[in-house]
Image (cartoon, rainbow, N blue to C red; front, side, top):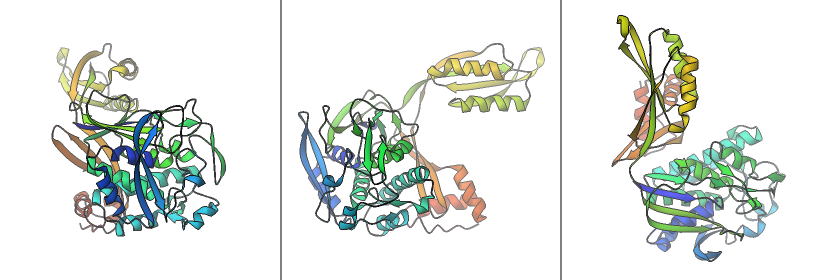
Length: 421
């Protein structure tokens, strides 16, 4: 399986991810020229060699109207998290105005020559950022006005990473736990803790850690890109590495300030799981359903029942729970707590799985989640039932009509879905 592993032991930012992924390509200069050929308003990409702690990698500089943003920023990589309140005066000088999500959608959809899948990725990343800002500031997504994240340099970073991911086309993207830094950072609102509130919101459920290095190591843009593309965070798997890229940050630290990207081959998905099961002949259907729900809430991979014949000619139910080996004790305790069984059988096994990822597409009828699966030479996708059902009910049409519209319009204008009964 073609696997991309991102080492985020010094955090992540859009420019660092861009540079690291660019180094994985056989012709980085040609791809940089392709990025400039997108003609993002006022933007130019400059890829150049850079050295951090004796390691040679690449640094990606984005200029907007001929100037960089570096000298204006007080944080580690990009001061991106200041999206409400006053705007820095230098942003007016560089023609960076308050930019809403709809303006960004208009730019990405109507002015950038991108594959449709890349457009979807770009808008999904911005959707994640907007949702985080909405939560942090207590306003609706429509009211969010991006400042640093909405400027052309950040549009450039997000577009570049999404296009690079499309070009590299890994079957799965994995990453290390994310080092976010520590201390405080100053922005338009005043002094904020690290990680910045929007970054912290974006990294919910992602393993993160601080450390002795003060500063903002992970930016909102970096966090949103990781959240969108990474399937799993953890140690690097066993893999045969084919290419390595180092994307350098702007500042110097005692440790090499870079994102390292490793592209290689891993074995198709296989993991160890446990089956816990018990036979039951004295529980009602309601009690069984309640027990199954508790298992799923606690992290069971799957729970199912099957009818069986038991001793004394009694009809019964076989209850089976699929879980990770580390969850064995907790799941066994739940089985004894919520069922009448006196014993639980355990069977260890290996399962082969497709790598799964859920992405959120922005449509005229609201966000729609799509499940993507890949591995063993197979790729498939499926829209989330709850989202299809919500649209079908609101539009008074069938589920099949919604599926058809989403599929047909994936290569056209997502804002003009045509639904028919």
